[in-house]
Length: 358
Image 1 (cartoon, one colour):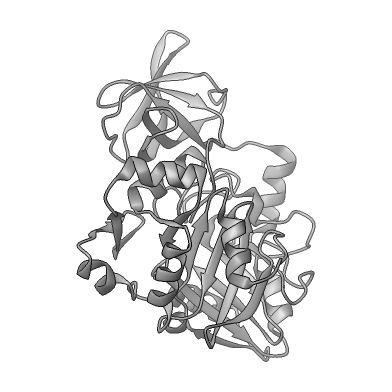
Image 2 (cartoon, helix red, strand yellow):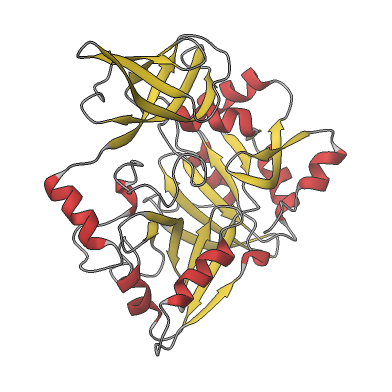
């Protein structure tokens, strides 16, 4: 969707909205009221997040599996129906162009993208389309998922499904829910994506809310994701970084054969040589840190710029600020402390400190 179909629902209830920092123009709830209570509920129970403005590209045709397999960085042909994975489309130089979750359906593939990226992804894939029997379509208008994350998320999903279902990462299940099709995707331990389409998403939101999930906004989302060391496309990484720099090893495969950018990715894995890596750093104060703030450290008697902040959040787990930032090699050991441009110090801490959320 170009916009969340829940925005009017939230405005009618007085929920404060703000643009997603990674997707300007895509509004989302900033918070639903008591932010510490939202965070506590996410840690001890189940967070409910509005991700209904995600995009989707559908790929059909008898050559769809072969077509995607030769382009994408993670497995495609090895996936059976009911399976999926995190995946990437890289540039020929091995840098990250698009991130998405791929699902293999019975007769087609679905690629769920961050907000506002579906049309560009479809166009990028079309660039490689020659004689293959493949149809590419931006089907974002029918895609309106919500996400659950937290230790009680599994139980809530099983109650909704009325049965025990497989929780393997990126396994998906379709079931009938109040006369509509509901697709459940297991994103990882205690993390789920649920999609029954834009027409029923408000009803699904209310059902999850009344079923025990706690609505959470961007403030809590960013606290959880940065505690988990999870970057966002368009904010923490873009077409200028390699997947290993952005800690995206879960989204590419080294054993699937050729794909766009594969030689560069394999060379980095074999020989190393990355100049930087996205890391989590604890700040010694709770004031916001601007994106682009530099990290300095004295080395060999010289004050040097050795990193760059990409996003900030207040960490409820640590009771202080937390940032994601790129740190140059030879300076990436946990416990290494930097002077933070704008004031304060930042120290590398090893994630994860929380649940993975999108």
